[in-house]
Image (cartoon, rainbow, N blue to C red; front, side, top):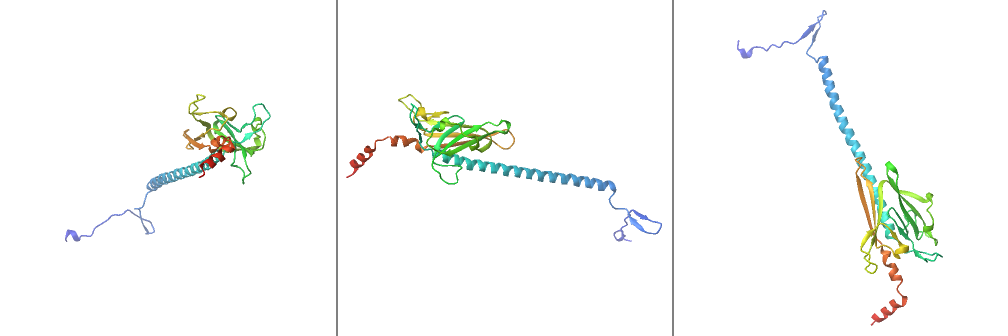
Length: 257
């Protein structure tokens, strides 16, 4: 017989019971099943861990995004209120006379603005105070005090604590700086200073810089500085207002054909 035509023979392990039933023994053993389940468990554990890590990163990213969005909106409101500073003069019976309601320090700022951040509708000029308060390991906070500007000496009174609202929390520091133009007559150079007292300066600063140091939110201990740079259009108001009223009229008449 041709070798190629020989039927192939395969020997399988079988078990023949006393009843004549035949069972194949070519399936998986218990050890093979246990090894397979163990490997499958490791694979599922790795997949679940990767999914959990990705979900945690996504939640952390969304939280950081919302925090930065909140800071961006608040800084825009702060910038708008600072740019709306008005040269409001406080009347006093003291010998020093009336003075501009503006007092700036390194970690606090007091002024009168035409823009009210907390009011739902415009109620006229408001007296605003920004003050940074330290808070230990949890971080400090920027507190805003705001009330209607009445004809009284604001600087002689301490702000009521119940009027304070924390607009930024978990921050490391807030620093205010004030821009002074060069004054050759008084030998003062052009510079940024950390204090500005309108009683002594007799004018408002030309610009104001506010630096907010915010934690990066990644748990690495890093910090992100946020800078608000605002010019004060009211800086020139005093010079224009103190000009004699008759001069402008005479100039206009001289220019007329």
